[in-house]
Length: 246
Image 1: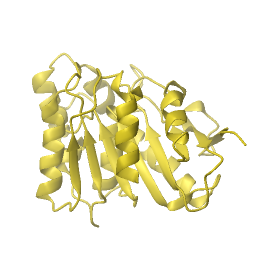
Image 2: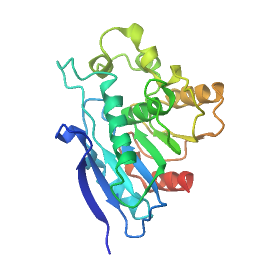
Image 3: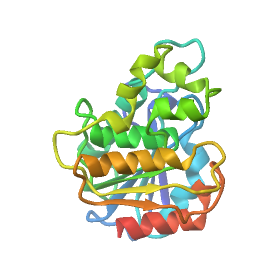
C-alpha cells in the first residue's frame, strides 16, 4: 500500500477556498493523531497545495495529515476580513471531527500553523468565541501581536487588508489578548532565528502570554533553521513536529 491523497470540501460551498487535502499513510489507524496544517501567506495568498511536501514528509513518518484552505483577503474585498479566516479554519476542523474521512482519531487532533496560519491556529485554541478542543498546537514563524508587528514593520500593508484600517482593533484580533474558557492544550512555538519577515519578539510575546494565563505546557524552539518560507519545509521542522506529537 502507498500514501493515499484525497481532496474534500468541508462546506456546502463548493470552492477551492473551502477545501482540504487529506494525506493518509498506509500504517494509519483509527488511533492515529491527525495533524491539521494551516498555511500562511499574510491572510491574502498561498494554497494548501504549496505545502504538499511538508504533508508528505509528515505522512512518511506515519501521521495522517489534513492541509486546509480558507478564504483569503484579496485587495478591495471587504467581505473577506478577520475573523473570516478563523471561522473557515474552524469549519474545516469541525468537519474533520464530525466526518471521519480516513483512519485517524478525531480526539487526537494537532493544529500546525505557519505565519498567518499560526495566528489562526492560536486563535482557535485561545479565543473564547471560536474555542476549539484539540490535543495540541504548533505555531511556526507566527504573527501573534499585530500592533507589535507594525511597530517593527510599519510597511506591512497586509494587516489593514486582512483586519481593516482601524488600528484600535488590532490588539483584540491578536492571540496575545485572548484567554480561553477551558485549559490550554500543549503548545510548541517554533521560530527560526534566520527569519527575515517575522521577528523573535512575536514568539516571545506568545510564550509570555501563554504562561501568564496559566498554560501548563508551553515550549519555545529556536533551533529550526531557515528563512521564513524555507524553514517550513526543512527536515528539522518535521523532526520538531514529530517529537512534539509523539
